[in-house]
Image (cartoon, rainbow, N blue to C red; front, side, top):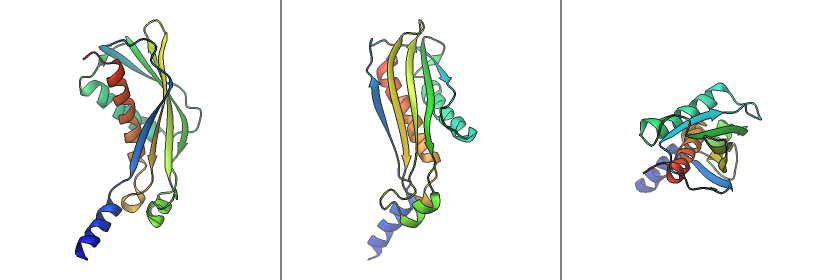
Length: 160
């Protein structure tokens, strides 16, 4: 009985954030880059500054501070927020992640361009939060989306 209570407590405390990357236009030329520049386009929806700042921070940490890329314009990563719905933290908490109650999500379109502005690939990165401690923080969805962008970029464009 005690084991079941512990398992239930852990499930309530853990944030349930996920992300996925949809490849809209596949990579046209498999180039390896040492330098990359992160460029934010104007969002097509209203997005709070805290969300865009958090996302950029996660991506910059993954790209630059972990030495995947140096700063520069060889590869331009142009991203645009195209969907933002923080959901309801109360509903996520109240329903405990049952169904999609209170689910929050954001979608970012990402274009990869070389120095001559040739589009190399186009993706959409989606982050979601469905439950967690006191309903889970929307920051988890933002972090997961940023990490997904970094993973795709490093796997497909970084010089190894």
